[in-house]
Length: 164
Image (cartoon, rainbow, N blue to C red):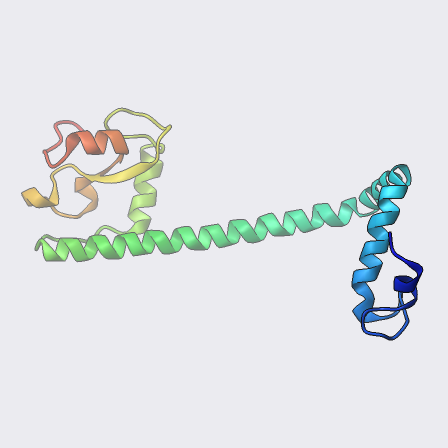
């Protein structure tokens, strides 16, 4: 409970409670006590405030989700470009031809209907798999790459795929 002495004086010594910017702590203590003393009225006021501002909250949620999606798509594009940059570097290091691009990969995913080329599953995240592995002299081109799920790609290891 706030004493009458505390109500009269703010910590800064100005003697104000509601107008003093430094007296925010006292206002917060007073409101906390009021909420404890008046739970029904507090609930009613919260409902009124909730329904009064529901359109603003929904609009803010839509804007927030749009920003999140934009940020995520930018991050995804960046990750995809970084992946292709790394792949081209590894292909150059292995001295094989590389001309596979992210747009070709997207087109390939659409052609395979976002399914694994080996098992046909669409439940798992797809990876790029070389039918003839780069370690065996296969090129890093669209004709040598198929989408595959992690289990199929791991099972194949560095063997030549029989039927993609």
